[in-house]
Length: 292
Image (cartoon, rainbow, N blue to C red; front, side):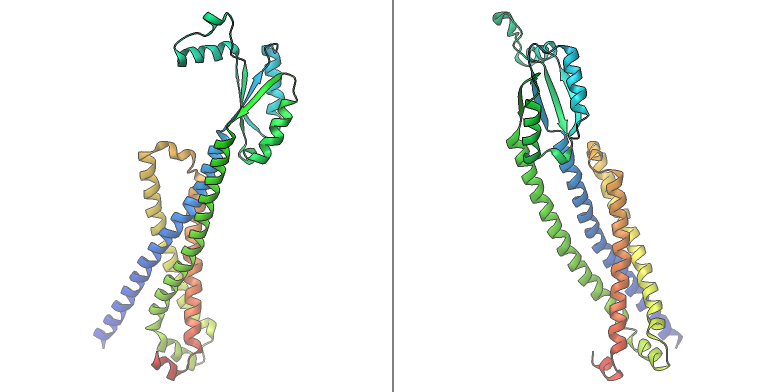
């Protein structure tokens, strides 16, 4: 008798370990999708904020006038950062790049003073740039304006496509993970279906019968989530060691939301699957339990 109990406990233990491992693997995949979705959003903002709008100033504009213009633009809602490049600085940079000084044969410095404006991510799109450019060109201190419209459009288009792909992948993976965890949980409860039926026969309420199964499911979900978070954290740390600059995109906010999402998924999915599986066996009669 004791040997039979030991075998039963051993089987249950293996079922719990199997459920924990399978849930961990699914949560790792879900965590990766959440991580990449959030990172793609940050990458989009990072790239947009490094696209530059260049204002060419008129030769009559003094340094003080240029600084006043910088201050005016900086207080507008779309400006994130502004760099002033004087005529002399522009000339030195061109001499470094070209290896010669054009002013030697032209007799004057042909390079205008410029303002390089980096926009906030929300304004780095075609529609916003149109009215921003129109507004800036009205200023009499500005002679011309330039920005890489084609590059900006390509960046926005590619990032939109990536976001859609990741979103579709997240939905599909959530459905698949729910199915996998549901089947695994149902198999673990299947072995105790007659215990459920016996408790129902002696008058136990459905809530009382479900309680231990839900507790076990939540515990497994928490353990699996912790293991999944550990694996994901190791992956992020390895990525940081090879590419330290990635932390500009992978912020602590991304890591915290990913970890919280994995923990929430682990608890909610396992508990909900256990609730469905127990309810299924509670509705069955003794004859139906023998047939499955």
